[in-house]
Length: 200
Image (cartoon, rainbow, N blue to C red; front, side, top):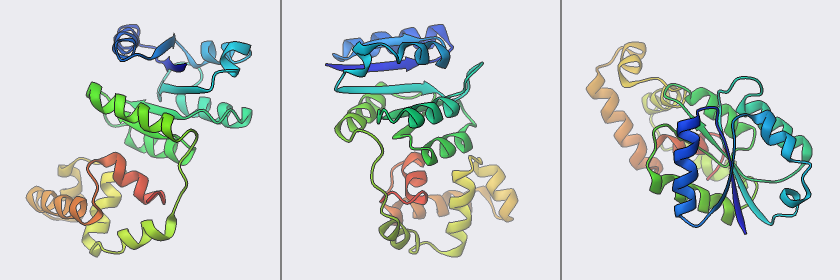
């Protein structure tokens, strides 16, 4: 049985995810807070599940998504975690991936992207292996300017801010971004961040 734990303090968002995942043949448990989820961890039914995945919002009252990840790591549960962020929370998402999150989703996201991310997390439980040498070889293809753009993109900066910071036009930033994605063979910001963290 595949169980998905959804942890989000937004009732409407949590409910919509519940119905979406149920319609895609997942068993789903929802929690309004990280504390509520942690309280269930003593439940033997949850501990005995072979396949499960945690979807958690990064910003919540009380225990945050990042603090929850620390708690799960301390318990050595090895359950894959997908972090959900609001717009502008990319630096927090980077921190979550450093702490071992399988991936992150920036709200709002497409249903198909979420389903594919969950399936990927379940196929490779826990965190993927890092391959820093291969990741570095890919990153070494970038020009110095593309490296600067990459750092600012991964810091969550919009094109206009990147342009002002680097003293170039927005159009030039867009060109550098396009070349960067092509050289690194990445499709989205999530893939870029994974690469900068040493995942090939």
